Image (tube, rainbow, N blue to C red):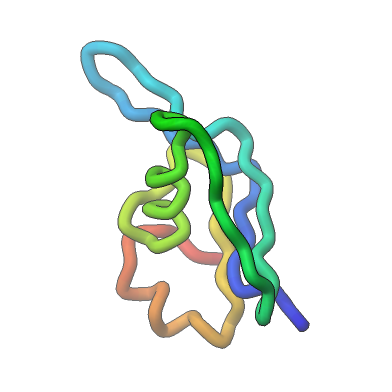
Length: 82
């Protein structure tokens, strides 16, 4: 089966009084039909990663690629999809 979503060299930095980088060069592929879990300490970037995958937030750099099956959903989000 193919991928549902791929993250390629994704970084996320929040700019403010203090710049805070929460995602560092994430490379991830979620395959169709797979079961996945996201585990980590508080403040490790789990919610940020889910927000990027769910198009609620866009990465500071890198690419988020969705399977063509889901292209219509992604076009309404904030991420640049290739």
